[in-house]
Image 1 (cartoon, rainbow, N blue to C red):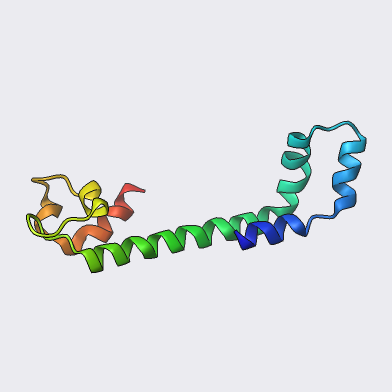
Image 2 (image 1 turned 180 degrees about the vertical axis):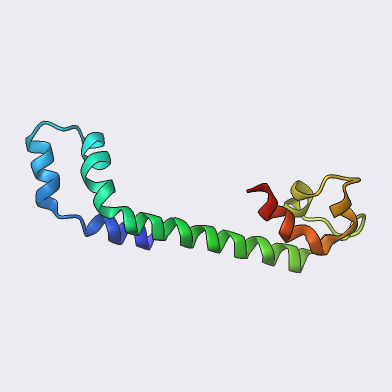
Length: 101
């Protein structure tokens, strides 16, 4: 959240006020003034959020494991369908995640 907050706080308030003075709605001001000016920070926040989520996903698989019939986490269960080639090879799980996207 910090990159988002910093990017939005960095937008010049005079531009936002000028937009409101010209009769643009709050949503219009956000979409036409604030978001384009804050775009680099929003993009950085999205990349950091994705990286953090991917890291948490890996930790769950490493700590919880994914041994069919013995250990199973919800994350692993959602990724592997019973009877698929990946269910016999837990080490291939992270790569299957990337093939989805």
